[in-house]
Every structure is written in structure tokens, then in C-alpha cells.
Image (tube, rainbow, N blue to C red; front, top):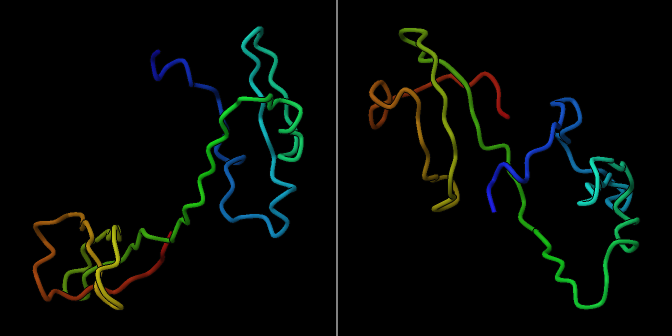
Length: 114
């Protein structure tokens, strides 16, 4: 099996940015193996496709707004911080881009988070 077997066109504007308040009304895209006919359904329709013995994997992870953008106050240089893992209350393991310009103790002004 190849990762290309899982490719499908998903326009950027159809990717959810926030969870729905009523999670059961989430959309479901069904890609039948027999043909190329794509079905757009609601998640509650998934019961039509599950059979006895099927394995349903549930991902209950939570996504955080972990990408911070800003600039260095003294030079105006752009900086991007990706929060990876909370170590303590206000301490995070992170990646900083560009890493060479972000020295320990350096300050940045953050302008937006995604």
C-alpha cells in the first residue's frame, strides 16, 4: 500500500478551522473503493458503512493554536514559534524559525497565533 492510495483533492476552504458546537453534524466524505464517486454526508451516516467486525479508531486528541508569529522588537526580523509540548505551566518545548536569531532570553513581539 502506498500513501498515494490515500490522496484526494480537499480544497483549503473545506478544512475546518474550529470544531462544530454540535459535533454530530460534522461532515463525512465517503470514497467507495468500487468507483470514483465521492459522497458528502454527515458523520451520523457512518453507521451505514460499518459492519460487524469492523474496527473504528477514534482520535480524541485536541489541537491547540500552537504556531505563533511575531518580530524582534530591536530589528523587526520576522520570527515563528511552534509550540510542541507543555513542560510546565508557562514553559514549552518549541521550535523557533529562524533558530539562529532566537538566542536564549531573546524577546519577541507576537502579532498573531494560528
